[in-house]
Image (cartoon, rainbow, N blue to C red; front, side, top):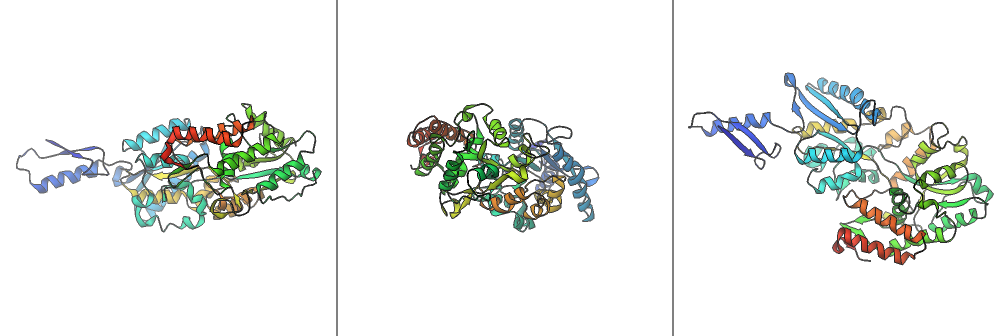
Length: 481
């Protein structure tokens, strides 16, 4: 005889757990409990029992040795797993860790993770894009870390090393769902040689949007120079939103999504679009490049060749585009010619949290599987992967901005720009809302900037955006204009 135990009775087990009962009809309650206990022990999700009484935990990431994100896969296999297993042996525990590699497109990986979580399967520790967290949490596929692993989450030493703004990458609706893996920051790059020719200071830090516009107007006097490149339009895709619209919106003290509401065609958005109009109607930016399929790449090349004065971009531009050795558009004189500044609020104190300066960041994060059989042990593995030693090992000698201040202090000393991001940008940064509808909202914002670049007024573009946003999320989910 088999008894199927519903999930409501055993919330950490598969939807139904088969329990083998004795053939004798006079089954006692004790025999039933014993049979149920054996079934509960044998079923499980997430982690599993290994040979010789070992507990097995699993890690998954969109990485595979010899392929996509190979360094990350090699780090897990060659550093994380042997060291964590050794640490547990030293503590008297027999724990094995398995790595489940992937080497697929990000959306394919996302679908796989969602299906695993929905069906109660999947790895114990899962690497995801930070922007997926809210979507997965709203679907019921993720739970806050503390609900899964208890008070040990609150006392983890790493929280003191991760700036509150960076912790936001793993926070949804005020609760911590994930540990941020790495992050980045947006700044204003500028060409010091062009600044000198325009009579501007070599050490430039604008304190308002007006000071950015004023510098661009001075640069406009230089022949063959585009004063300011701030991404606009749909051809630039998400780069328009992340490098342009959202930092500017943060500079008005506004987030695109906050308190359960989306920002519609408000005065703040009209101010952002007004900034775009001043740039492109005033001849301070090149409207043609915003419409080209490879426009962003062209802007990189033009900056590297001294044809753009100011460029709004992330630290990726510094370390991967104009790097003197490995850059796509290497600048041999980068360290002497390229300056960088914080993005100012519209005016001092007008930014998010009353800040003078703002930024936007992206990054990946790691979560726990709510169906893990060993959530406390899975948290030990997750927090071990985010220890200072592990994060430094993951870098493999590369200078990259991490979530941990102590690691950044140690590994970024050789690169003043990345140190600037870690020390000055990350404390004032913000993140995109991790919700499923965000990409469509982002596309609507891109369309609004395209409208302004092509000559429509900020008011018209904001109204069209508000209409589209209403179609996407409903009027009740929008902050009144």
